[in-house]
Image 1: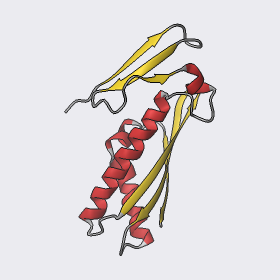
Image 2: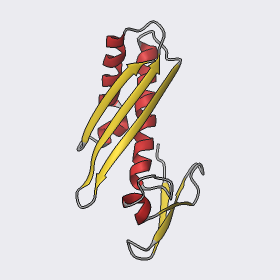
Image 3: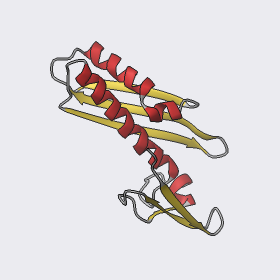
Image 4: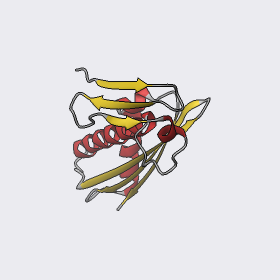
Amino acid sequence: MKRTAQAVWSGALRDGKGSISTQSGVINDSPYTFKARFEDESGKSATNPEELIAAAHASCFTMQLSHFLAEAGHPAEKLTTVAEVTVQPGVGITKSALSLTGNVPGISSADFTASAEKAKANCPVSKALSSIEITLEAKLA
């Protein structure tokens, strides 16, 4: 199975602008800029590649974990993951920090953490990001 996304850019790096669209249409001509990537700490001016990687990592990890939990007889009522991707100008993407809160009836904290660690190691996006540091903080609600 293959998925596609399209990026369009006009202008130079610092003053140019671009748009991103995905095959599904969920993201359609969303703007991205140098400012959004390297200057706007609020993250509200436009999207950027790191934000999209964070979304991919959070969603992939959470789906993988839901599978492992159900397989172990503990289907989750709710899993919430925040992925924070760090980019250092001139260096690149250096880290993805996963922060997970789960509502999983009948599971011990130790088993929940073990399943989360297994999901972190096995989700396809984690594997694709294996050249960077990936951390995980997991807690039950």
